[in-house]
Length: 326
Ligand SMILES: [Zn+2]
Image (cartoon, rainbow, N blue to C red; front, side, top):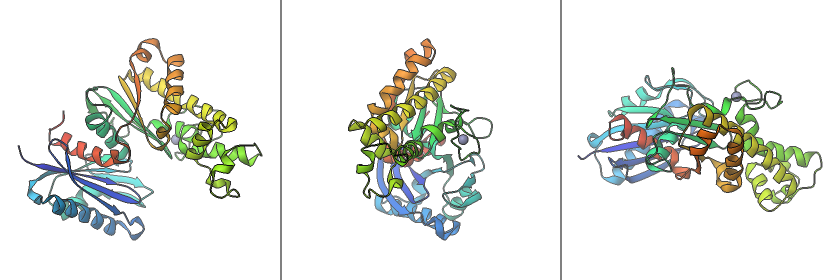
């Protein structure tokens, strides 16, 4: 059967769009600045431009495209196509599905970006041939997507998988963007790593982290990447911070393992690029803390799709919706 799908990864700074055949093979790609500051109409125009660009590059006609999948920031309503709240776009209650469909008459399906990434890794990444998995991304925050019996689990109103807001340390003073304290992403994300690094240097602890920033007078430059880099070079202070954060990551993963008994946990996002330095301690904590049966079976692995996970996930969403992946 001939036909194509398009995936759009709508981010706060860039729009990544790709056209793929029904096997998910990418034939053309486009990358445009989102221009979120210029307002919603401009952003929608940019999305349409990016779609037209991949059609042109791949020499495909509109009518040959069966579906468009869009990965976007949430919370959202997948059925209606509404983005309720996206601070990085400055949007509230925007029906992105309608807006795209009005401009280009192709069925549009939207998905929360972390959920789309889970679909991407399930069908085209580390999770191929795995029926039950959790994808988690550890970067500025912690996000996730849950796949049960090969299908994304959406919950009662598309809010499932918000794993960053499980409370790991109620005694913590770290406030979360959601208003609670001690949420997983408040104490174990890349942002948390950077904050702990800054705090340590700020109170005068002697650390390599200071030397690794471009401007030695600007400790605000210390981020998660600097902390992991310093730890990799044997810095003791950074090593302790990393140990604390990977312990929290492990506790959260152990909870997920106990609740859902997944075959695989796929770890993506900037922090996961440190590889086994992050993953091995997580595996150890899971082995110590999770129940024996689910701990024995779960594989904790790095994501495979890296920076393309969003757009590949959007393609997977389109292919799932037209019944090509099931
Ligand atoms: Zn929270």
